[in-house]
Each structure stands twice: as structure tokens, then as C-alpha cells.
Image (cartoon, rainbow, N blue to C red; front, side, top):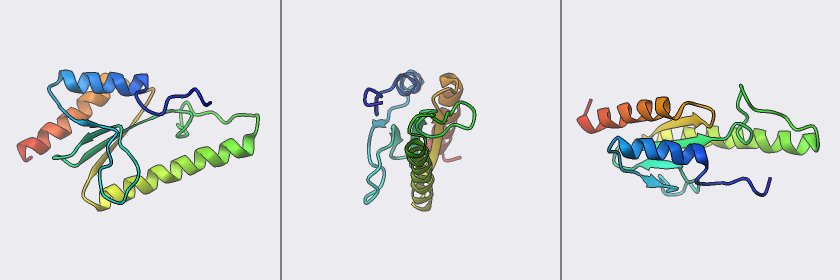
Length: 127
């Protein structure tokens, strides 16, 4: 598990590449608000949009998430604490006026990029 990347994962890079090809520019691994020591995967600061690309195992995907049989209690606690932290992060960002997008690693990156781009472009247009 130590070898698992924490940033610049393949799903993350694919999504960033698609967003970039659509003409969108963004920050990578940035803290959106002061006092929240959690970094986004993709950040549109002017539009107040935070994007997280969540791994199915680490964030407990309801479709693909698995529960290890070895050291089961440790992993269940770890994954549940990740989920709780994700909810807390979303709550704090939304309370500060941000829009949060959560993208599962198994999602089609084109669909996710289109969904995010539509929202960012609508914010830029003032819609």
C-alpha cells in the first residue's frame, strides 16, 4: 500500500488533460481556503470550484470498494475515516461558498470533464 500514489494518479492526470484540452486552466494540489489543510486535486479558484478524484479502495466506493480480509479492523477504520474526512471537507468548502465535485476513479473521464467544464463555463458566463 505504500506504493499507492497520493497525487498525479492516472485517473487524475487523464481528467486534468481533458479539462486542459477544453481550454480550462486550473491549480493542482492547492489548498482552497485558509485553515483547511486539505489539498484539492484540481482547483478553479476564481470560480470557487474544488475537484477531488477519489480512489475506489481508499474512499470506499459503493460499487468497486472492497474490504480487505487481512487486518480487517484497521482497514475498515481507515476507509471509514477517509469517508468522514471527505464529508467534512465538502461541508466546510460548501459553507465557504465553494462547489465540490467528487469523481470516482472508475468514472469515464470524458463525462466527468464535461460535467465540470459545463459548470465552470457557466460560472464564468455568470449563469
